Image (cartoon, rainbow, N blue to C red; front, top):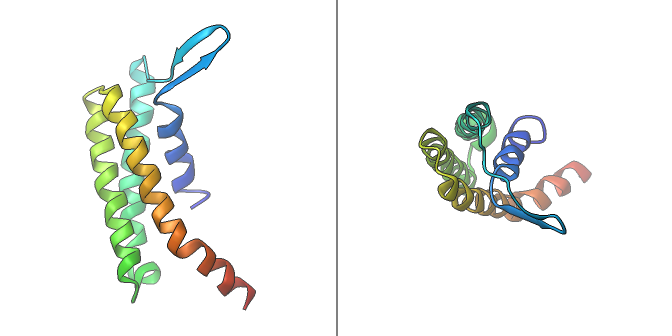
Length: 119
């Protein structure tokens, strides 16, 4: 997760919304072709990460894991469409959905993984 999925999710989250500072409001949405291409590439990587997570080595016997991975794939595909359409609002909305996808899996599996490492 730290090496493959997280950097791409972070790029999505860092490319949407606004930051309010003393100097004013900064729009984080991509503004160049290169920035939109980076979002598109991150979205494609998120889809592929979902594909990897449903491989038997990771998912065998874990139906909920597969469900979380499918949610990741679906959100990644929608992010890909948003990037291709240069749709900053959809990127923002889907960034929230991506967070929910990630957090729901973490809620179920992160503590379990830590416990397994301790045993």
